[in-house]
Length: 362
Image (cartoon, rainbow, N blue to C red):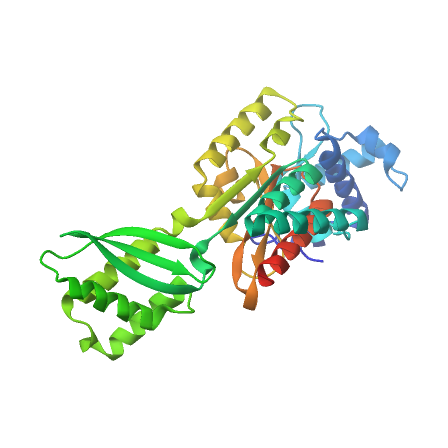
C-alpha cells in the first residue's frame, strides 16, 4: 500500500546517502518518537538496535542524519527527534503500511452500517468520525458537499417586485432555497420562462454539470431567452454556486483526544491554535478538498499546509466516492505529527471505502 502525501516526496538522493546502518538508526528514532514523543539518545539506541554499535558510533550517525535535515536536537546534550522533513521522508520512503486487523475491520463495518440503517448516510458519517476518533485517539473529521446531488426540478417564486425565491430540488429529496434579485419591471411570465429553460437543461445533472450544459446551450442558441429571463437564469445559477461553500457539511469528533497527551505548555498552545482553526472550518474544508484528487489516502504533515503551520499537527485523509465514482466527500483524522501513520492509514482507507459503498447503494 502506498500513501503519497500532497507535497513532493523527499528527494531520492537523501535515501541514497543513507546506508543500512543509518536507515535503521533513523527508523528507530522515528519509531520511538511516534510511540512516546520523547527524544532518543545514543545510549538507548545502542541497547535496542539489532546490530552492535557503541554510543559514540551512533552519535556520529545521528550527526550525519542531522546534517541531512532528518533529525534535530531539541536542546544541548539531548537525544534526537525527527524533523518535519524527516517525518515526510519516513512516511514516503521507509514506512510499511500493514493491513487492518480483522476485529477493527468488523467494528468499522458493523457500526457504520448500523448507523446508516438508523439515521441514513448522515448518521453513518457521524458514526465513522466518532469511531475513527476512538480508534486513533485523534480527532475524526469529514466534509461532504451537496454539489454532487443530481438535480430534479427548479422553480422561481416572486417575493416582491425586485426579489424572487429560487427553489432547487434534488433527486435525493433535498431542497435548497435562495433569494435572488430580479430586474425592475420584470413580468411574471419571465419567471416561468426562466424556470422552464432551467428544467430543460438541469434534470439528472449535478449543479456543476448543469452550469456547463447551460453555458453550451446558450452559446448555441443565443436568441432562445430574452434579456430579462437570461439575467434571471444567471442570477439563480450564481446564487446556488455561491452557496456551495455554505452547503458543505463539516463534522468533527474527538477534539478532547488532542489534549490527552500534552508534554509542555507549548503543546497546549499548539492545540489552542488548532481548535481555533477547527472553529473557523474554512481552512479544514480547504485541506480536506485537497485530498479529493486521485485515489487513496493522503498525508499532510505540519506546515506543509497553512492549517497546521502554527499548530504543528498532521492529517490523514481519504476521498469518499459514491455512484459512478463521483466524489461524495473526504474523511480524515487529525492529530499530532507523531500519529501512528502505519496503523491509521489503512483504518481511514477502509472507513472511507465503507462509506463509499453505502453512498453507492442509496
